[in-house]
Image (cartoon, rainbow, N blue to C red):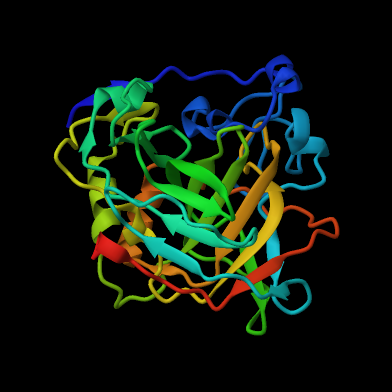
Length: 328
């Protein structure tokens, strides 16, 4: 496996304050080391509930919106009281190397259109590849697959197009689901985040729960490929996956019937708000051993604890239509 090291970029309170729209680069997990980014008061971003260091007993982060934001993510999605059903156009999944132009749609329609990415290149890793390429990263905080600027996969919300920039994994899940048999919230074994960025910098994230509780679940082939090709050393990336097609659409559950949506933030520093969240209700089933392997990449769990909803509304997209096109 050919691996390359990445520079760890320190977060700066000045750069955060002067930054414009939320950018996917703010959520590039390569900018954080395994323990997180240290603040000027000695606290450290920690990914285990209640754990910070060296001298604070409660979860805290001193920079920007992590500490003062009112629309932070993740949250507990309360199915007993909170979500408001919506009547929307179906969400459609299609995978096409040459997708057609976007037709006219309602402002509330939601379309996931991912394409197989055909190679892994050095250019994709350093941002110079304009083609359809990807790279496997161990950012020190998450396992991440990043795409080149020319990758055609995208999330379409109404007439707005959000190209897919990267996806990454959290173990255990960041969002919780409160329902009858889980009054304190169901926490899944993992959570997958597809990060999309509109031309003006606005982010939309599609979240997929990973259910690794079923002992009979088969190994997921795409997750297997990602695990095998991601380097174990933090802050490195692997470009030796050339010739291995990677279709992100195969990480979308086939029997999804509803999606929860709300206004939130990045779940890692600088915790910038203004992020549109879409969290699928139906989890993707994976083998328990795969969840265990994901967890072994890092010393700490890499999930942020749930944040206050602060009277935010969680809405539900129902009656979703799934069309996998040329993906299968």
